[in-house]
Structure formats: C-alpha cells, structure tokens
Length: 68
Image (cartoon, rainbow, N blue to C red; front, side):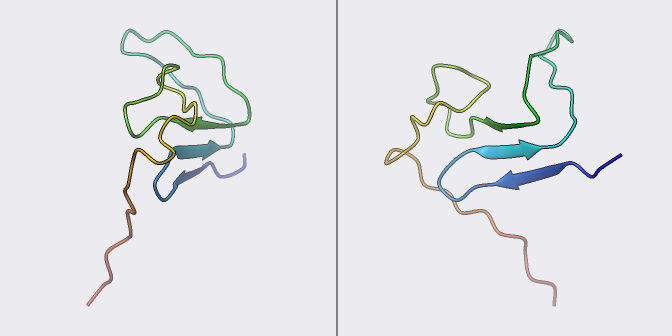
C-alpha cells in the first residue's frame, strides 16, 4: 500500500493524493479521484472540494515549526 500525501498549498487548497476514503459527517462516501483538492478558504461552491474560488481571495501559508 502506497503512502497517502496531504499537502497544504500556499494560499489555496489541501491536496490529497493516494487511496483514501472521504466521508461526510454522517459517514456517507464522497466519490473521489486518486488526487483531489479540498477547500480550505470556505468560499467554494462545491464544498468540501476546491473549485478555485480562493484565488485572490484567501491568504495562508502554513509551515512546519522549526525545532530548537
């Protein structure tokens, strides 16, 4: 089984790559592809998926904290 990758894109979506199952709050399964993006800005009209609405309307650059 290959490792799933979740990437938090700068000023954009959360990109999921790999064999995962995406469920809603009631446990219903969303149909997904081997790679898909989840909305992080809250502006998408296709939630939980990203539709690109964030472009120019959302800024966030999350980084792993440096260890001391």
